[in-house]
Image 1: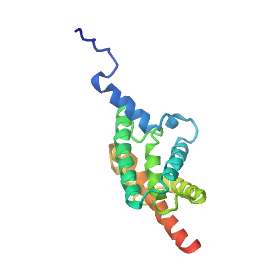
Image 2: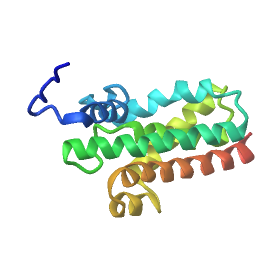
Image 3: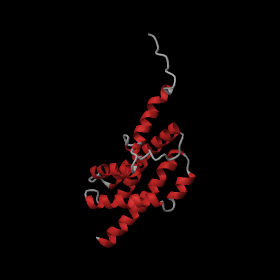
Image 4: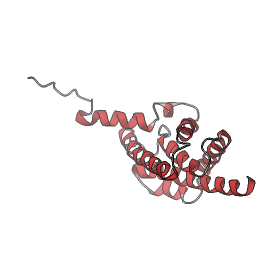
Length: 167
């Protein structure tokens, strides 16, 4: 058997992992949108949250933690490949943050899913404490993702309070 020589510039044996990391980080390419890639990434998470509408809370948390872990890996791979930190092309962090935001709502109710979308986008842009601190201080994938997780937690708290007092 003969071996195939490595092709210069292809990245060697880890090239596939880097490509998959970028595909996941951009949520299948949504992050390449020239207009509002973060909003598109968040919108892509709505059907996922809706699909999880009937899972028990513990299973939802486990799935969200799994998405967060994959997002940290993918964001780290993508930023390393592009030589950036928190490239706007990375939108898997919005998916992770939105799942956190949707953790306190009835995910079968489209209005609550949309409210989570709006409140998460506001929190992601404003970056209330500790999101801004995380964004600035944490390197690599954790810094890219956990500021969105913090923004999602803020949105989840606001949604829980609204549900308590508004209905």
